Length: 451
Image (cartoon, rainbow, N blue to C red; front, side, top):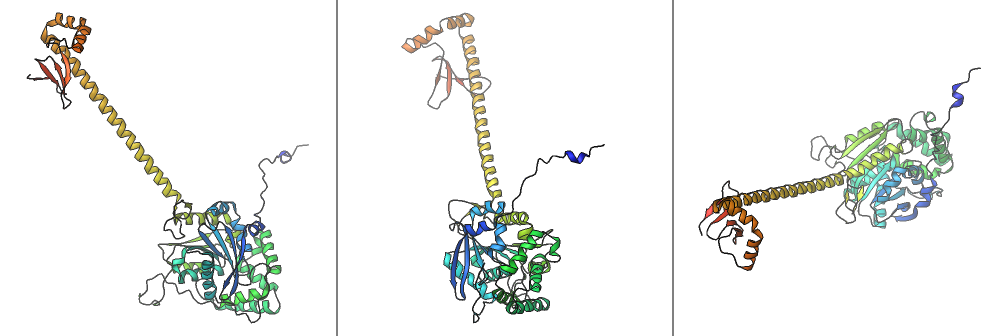
């Protein structure tokens, strides 16, 4: 009986991949309540407060833990966050296990939610921050950056909507808010929230992820508080952003665009792709970029590696990635260099050292050749002087009595006719006797010098 070859397969490279623990971000964060003019808001601090600040804002039906826990616990982000401190801002009444807001509580509008960030920055002493928002949170951060451009150094916005709500969105969300107040979290509301985050056919995607979000909407969300946030979101006004400069005919006089660098991200399966395209058309193309990540709608959960890499490169391009010990005038109060600038700085330093080394070698070779030429001229001059004096015999006597002549010269007993080498105050070399001296130069023939 033939043996099936599939029976002998041995699995050698199988590794267990554990999902990112969401509870770790809750334990690592310092939970704070920040007072504002519209009541207290919840802020969770993750990281060293002396580092540059990143402010996050969540989307509808979520909070900081469910929206950002998995992403900021991703390995690439954990390494990047060693240089930053993250301030997770949660909208009023949207935190985990929040009690129902009072019936007479007037929920802040979108502009007032953006204004609450001023209290957060003032409470923690932050002069400038990097904004990281998703959906409704991206709209809030864009409003804050538009009104206070000096307090935002850069923006990373996912599925950001810059226009007011359309009739279809307004109708669906109005029914959702009414059901949340009267009947609680109904199946229709859950289906709309799943479409808002995952787009069409979420059941065809990551089953575990979809079930986790459904359970969160059913059990962990306060329906009354969510109805208030949805009502504020559908009554938002336009951001009044325009790419064209103010004063251009046909544009609003007060319309301006965002001044800081912006990276505008969406997923290819997201229902908000057209909204991000509209938003991108209102931004300055010189300091903004639009990115559509494939095979996902909820980018934070479905493609965290691609988003983390895009965010890391965006921060590097703006000079936030590599801190130096000396403070300087960067948007977040600390000077940063990109990896590319450090590489080219080191490259230029290495090139300078190589040039200096080559110059030293050339100078050494030139000096060695000069010494060699002078030595050859000395030997040639000595032979010429010997031949012009007493012939071969005299030369033999000089060679034979060289030690005697040197001893006589040292003792001052020379007769004044012996040949020797001398120098003058200018360093010029001479060879010969007192009566017949020859200047040693680089010329082919020695030059006689009168006594």
